[in-house]
Length: 321
Image (cartoon, rainbow, N blue to C red; front, side, top):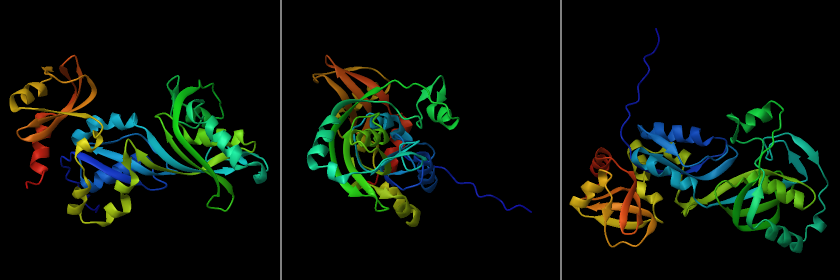
């Protein structure tokens, strides 16, 4: 006789878990594990980290999923280690080595590193790697790559806001570079590491990658998956932060009860506010996040709104002081 499978009782969870994603898990795998731990009804992440990468991965639940796109656009910071002298099929440690060259450390002087650093700082163009999820003719590039087909990829413009490069050893004791990178959305750190290796004349591929900040959210604020797994269920909810933790850079506007009700129906509101592209809108009675908007010529124009049910559930779950 088959054992009866226990059905998880889902519940509304609204907020953000700042996860320090572990090595070896895809972003979606990490999301599904935390969703199961919280018994949450609805969840989404804020942009992928490769299984090879660790670090900051905000996970959105319930109403917070409406603001996940904001983190896709955010500036991010990474610490990467790239092994010198080897180029791989995937530009990282998961691929096969396709070319090896000797590494002359005496030629990689501080002056040379400074020149390369300057060359790759600011607006640059990158050709996306074949092993990526970008699509061509409806098919992901990695599908072509696995079939042994290389297709033309147009270069994309990205911005490296800050770059620091130092010589180091990787985990296997091989000659490597440590790159600390602050960059715009769409930047491939694998490609950057490979291009820096080419600029040094020996080639390189990514061995490890850690995201230390996304949109002002640092890894010091994150919780590990192991910690969440090992704590009692009631303690896990303490790590669900309010949805507006993703909106710290937004201008704040507070509306009274009457105006809040109208705003929540999607109506524009008029006031003496200065123009602003990103606004977090709150009601004052009771204090609650209503959604995000922008202001043009004194008009507060809704962009994404919470539903009255979501607001009620958030208020009911918020401890009363």
